[in-house]
Image (cartoon, rainbow, N blue to C red; front, side, top):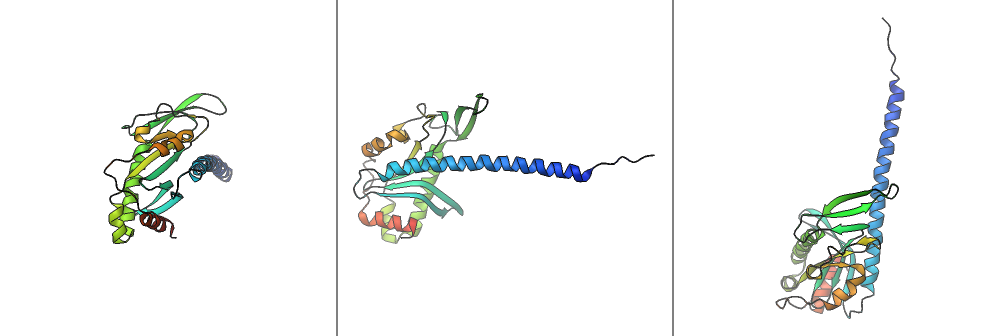
Length: 216
């Protein structure tokens, strides 16, 4: 009876190469997504940095710990009457969804084949609501008592900004709930009025919030 020889070394090498190529493809895709996200955040940052708002503070890429997890905010705009937590979405394609939906849907075409496809993503309004909850908790826990009490009375508004020039967010834009296209962001912020029950942010509180979040 003869023996059949299997080139295990060659098979192993092929499998390793295939896995490496697959891993490289995933890493490249993730890197592209991260890069596009950064590009979108840079666009929104430029808009916020050029707002004609006296004594407003603008912070970008804020990181802090809350709920035993790291948290990150794309942008934070602190004005005399509102603190805006701003989430940037840089999505090419048509976005559809409802305020109360758990997920929204992105419809787009593949670059090479031009075939249509869609993918779901977590409702960014729910995402920003979670960010606001943890931001307030973090500030109240880390501000001195005087400022923590004042902070508990202020209004924090979530804003979702769609920034991709080839994105169509017309089906989800809703200024009442804070969903805007980047070109309308300055107008939205200028016209925004918080609820009458909200307290104003004193200069001291604005300074202390920035100190807690940036360390200086």
